[in-house]
Image (tube, rainbow, N blue to C red):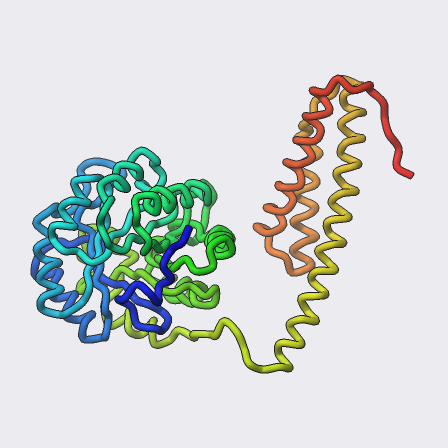
Amino acid sequence: MNLKPISEWGMFENKRPILIAGPCSAETPEQVMATARELAARNVKIFRAGIWKPRTRPGNFEGVGSEGLQWLKRVKQETGMLTTTEVANTTHVFETLKAGIDILWIGARTTSNPFAMQEIADALKGADIPILIKNPVNPDIELWLGAIERLYDAGITRIGVIHRGFSGMSKSIYRNDPVWQIPIEMRRRYPDMPMFCDPSHISGNRKLIEPVSQKAMDLNFDGLMIESHIDPDCALSDAKQQITPARLSEIIDNLVIRHRHSQDAKMAETLEELRAHIDELDNRMLDILQNRMEISKQIGTVKKQNAVTIYQPGRWDAILKTAVEKGEKKGLTENFVAVVFKAIHQESINIQTEIMNSDAPEHVTHAD
């Protein structure tokens, strides 16, 4: 894909973070304008507000609808800020284009639906407007890339992504688990892809917005989309994760913005030495994993010969418990150790399954 880098979008200042801010939902003309004026006074250049709100269950506030587009037009006229809102179907696309909205974004639920994405892409053919795509609800980078590709195939070249975290079943301090390795992989595949972070939806709690924003800057994200409301506690949607414009200014002022590269030759030399050491350790880990999987093959053969099931719950529970305990003593978090060992265990199961289903002669091989 030949996407335009953000420096060629013609609408952003050349500094980090590019800031998009505004309420979760446009509620009233007064609320929208009061928030917009406060943000404009604090040098925010892009105003966001949800006009149509996809709610999990009916009966909750689902947005003011098309009427709110006129409020966004007024924001642009009175403050000079660019405006952006979410679109989830072709009607939304046509109405926002007609209203002159500057940037559109695709929500996580819509990104997860290829049929909806294709309809939106078809509706956008011939339109020269920037589109930001939030990650899908589940941690599936291919689904995220599919949404990008559909828009690109429709002729959109100003495309960026918004990392808003992923739904999960495990208990977490976050509303949506960041799973930072997925946006990192997106950046690896497409280094020039403009990347924003939505700390409001990752956090679900205004107290976490600052550390999540700092993490995004440390990972070299281009910008932030943060929900800001003139009176957050009275917001009609997502009240707990919204902050006042004044608090937003504090967070942005507190951010430490680091450079991608350093001109310090000594630092570069030190980094190269440390990276060489990491490469050596990585190679050793791969050798160890190869040996471990060879033993898994032998175990699979023994189980097949003796008609024993592959999965042994007691054995696996003991392995994981011991690994977590040892890991914690070595300064490794429980989550990290669990993720690594679960991946190893799954590969071991895959190998033993292949052996169980193979027609190869049943014999045990022995390591030298």
